[in-house]
Amino acid sequence: MVFIAEQTVPVPKKDLISWIFDEIPYDQDKPIYIDAANPKRSLSANEARIIVRKLVAGLRKWGVRPGQKDVVCLHAFNDIMYPLLFLGIIGAGGIFAGTNPSNTSYEIAHHLRTSATKFIITEPEMLERVLEATKDCKIATSNILILDVLDQAVPEKCSSWNTLLEHGEQDWVRFNDLETAKTTEAAHLFSSGTTGLPKAAIISHHNLVAQHALMWGDEERDYPIKRLLVMPMFHVGALPVALCTSLKAGHVGVVMRRFDLANFLSNIERFQITDLAMVPPMVIATVMAPFTKDYNLKSVKSAMIGAAPLDKGPQMKFQELIGAEAPCTQVYGMTEATCIVTRIKWPEKDITGSVGRTIPNLDMKIVDDNGADITDYNVTGEICVRGPTVIPGYLHNPVGNQAFNPEGFYHTGDVGYCDPKSKLWYIVDRKKELIKVRAWQVAPPELEAVLLSHPHIVDAAVIGVEFVRDEGQLPRAYVVRRSGPGGDSLNEEKVKKFMEEKLAKYKELAGGVKFVNVIPKSASGKILKRLLRDEAKREMSAKL
Image 1 (cartoon, one colour):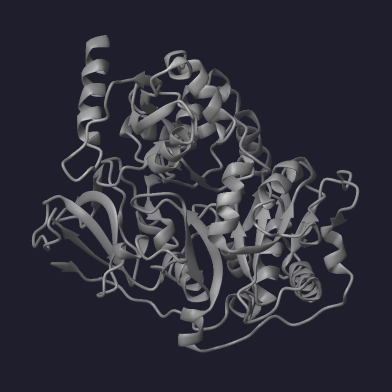
Image 2 (cartoon, rainbow, N blue to C red; image 1 turned 180 degrees about the horizontal axis):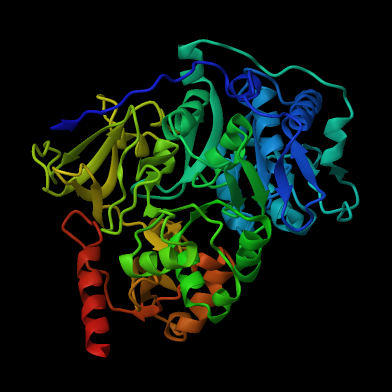
């Protein structure tokens, strides 16, 4: 049974930049982006439009060509200029790719290759890792610019991104056609999908416009929205609302470079923030910190939590901090749907653990393990989603693209059900093997590939283990050592150090390393991770 969208709203067919800047319904001189660390740094819609037009001219001078699918990777922390670079890249006819600034050179190289990046803009302190990553990616040093927005020194033989602003103004690529909007790529965002290494998800102009139209097009608030933009802007959980909705709707965004709990709480009070988008670790850190009581969070009128499930205990505690009238609800989304799929619409509240109802224009269905449709409510199965926010697929990845079926449904790998009375959706499990570490996606195959590159490891498997309820999973490796002197001396510390040199900190083997004689596999050679998870659960139970 297909759960057909109960509400539909029109989705404009314009290019993303025209859609944002045409017919702005608010004061174009009011600050929209404000630097939390230095509030004197701010940008209005009028200032943003001029800078975007300058960036369009500068990027084209740099070599970004319309129609050539030139990808520009922005490898940086949050800043008020980040949204303008995003829009400038797309407006010049290029494709935006954002990467995690904490990535190692090994991870950066994978992302550069996967996204087909040709140009890079990065910060000085990240340049060394970027240069190491570009060695095998055929990206010339002249195709790297330095984002020195904090007045950092520009390294020798490098140029500042400010050179892009020295070539006058040019108009962005414009169109007003549905087919063009659907087929013109705006961004390559990274997702692990249901399996495998991180993939470049192709996000179209239409996907981004639709995400705003379906989430905010019919949203009515009785107060002006002011958000604290602290989620990383390269991530799909922040990108649509931070880089598109703020300028489109006039929602003020106070930008934090990165998350720090004390500054997060202080900024909520200082700037009288009304709306928060959070991940579970932020919620748990807030409710557990003894100094939270020193801050007044009562200005918050809406808090949405996503990226991973959250038990209702911490959710209710956070609700108490922001006030009884402010909804604190969970949402469900993914890169492949350009962010949010289900939500509780303001001002409704929910503390049942639900992730809400589908946003307009999205169809959902549930299938069993054989792919057959489940035709009833309250029956769990794999959730599939279809609609204008669902991406056309992954870049150059036919295996990953098998998750998109001919009917237009994306098979999410998440297991859930729909309640017949409330029409609320509940996520109960993950069919996919992704590990959620503090809301970050960790793909076991990526870690396994690194483990298997070690000269003294002959086989390996990675699963997620949970030591403390509500604190998420941690990656654990099961390793088969190579016989001989090198393998015999291989210990947990050496394996962890090897991994730390190649992967970001959140991918570290914090769940431990277990040495085994053999990795359990099926007759076809598939790793039987269910057996490893069962063994880990028994181990955890024995420790209680």
